Amino acid sequence: MVKVGIVGATGYVGGELVRLLTRHPQAEITYLVSESYEGKTIGEVFPHLHNWGNIVCQKLDVEALAEKTEVVFLALPHGVSMDIAAQLLAKGKKVIDLGADYRFDNLAVYEKWYIKHTQPQLFSQAVYGLCELNREKIKTANLIGNPGCYPTTAILGLAPLLKSDLVELTNIIIDSKSGVSGAGRGLNLGTHFPECNETLKAYNVGKHRHKPEIEQELSKLAGEEMKITFTPHLIPMIRGMLSTIYLNIKPGVTLEQVHRLYQEFYQDEYFVRVLKPGVLPETKFVAGSNFCDLGLALDQDSNKLMVISAIDNLIKGAAGQAVQNMNIMFDLAEPRGLDYPGIFP
Image (cartoon, rainbow, N blue to C red; front, side, top):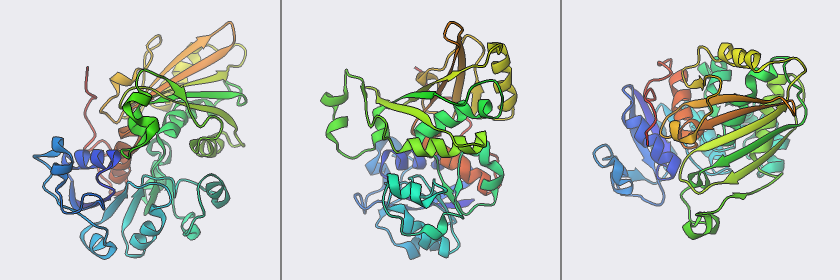
């Protein structure tokens, strides 16, 4: 059994980590950290975990946390994880950071979009934890930067094309929509029910912090610097994320060719489902699961290829992907604890 700690256990992502790991046959949660709910069991905080949640939440004590765990999930806002991760790594623990502190290769890029980093020496150790693309590096890693939710939809949606010669690599547009849970559990006027229900809004247009993360990973895949147009939207539902990606297809390329490319690229990937021609993803069909559904369409009049990518933002976009990373790091079967369908309706 892998002994697991979760710091930030009572946020939405932390709660999903608890839910997934309590059902994991080869993992045992041995330490939960929550400053807000110290002394309460996780079942008291999240009633849906009542029969599984007898572990008491504690304040952060790095010494005790390290003593009782082998791997620690940091489900914290950006800027909060960097020092905690350094302390745990110094004690020989594996760390999976679900924030942005260790997702970037370039310190200057991180500091431009976030804040000054206090542990720049760890950048070279961190592995970007998109399992389908970085599996071999993840196997030997001690520090994982778990990808953001929007980047997961975009990168998985585009990866096969960036290694082909079927499309133009310029003027790529990523139009994404997310459920409100992506904003976290904290109180915020913008995600207050009367403010976000029965409306649809774009936000952080041209300046969302996931843009440089997407560009970093797409550039690696393409072998050249990539620039994209990325617009996120908030939709009035709790969970789910869907990205529609627009590319210029090269003359003579058919939808059948593109579909075959995707099938071959992801044929061995359990958690990526390439849908049949004419079938497009919906958030409802991935809700509650670790799957990413991909669909393709072609507008021949405009010569535009559309790639549609759907995930559950709290699972494949966060907690589920983190557990998938843990499975790889500890040489466990990759779907272990995650191999179930979504919930419907």
